[in-house]
Image (cartoon, rainbow, N blue to C red; front, side):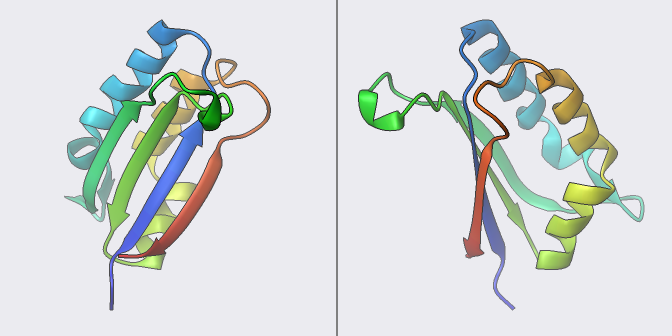
Length: 104
């Protein structure tokens, strides 16, 4: 079964808040646990280049999961993901982030 690669794009206007999100994602592979064990293969976040083609998206997070079930756990039950959501609450503009995922 192929891994699941997920990209989440955020519109965060304040560079300080972008850095807060990058810091949270930098420890996600250790912080996110399922059944007492880390379950995210890769987690990174980076700011986008200042370019009109990015349509205001200022941060891209990339997470890689071993399965769709792991991604669903991340969305619905993961405490570390809840911390990221709490960190970004009220800082993301223009609605929720754009999330896409695909087979890796």
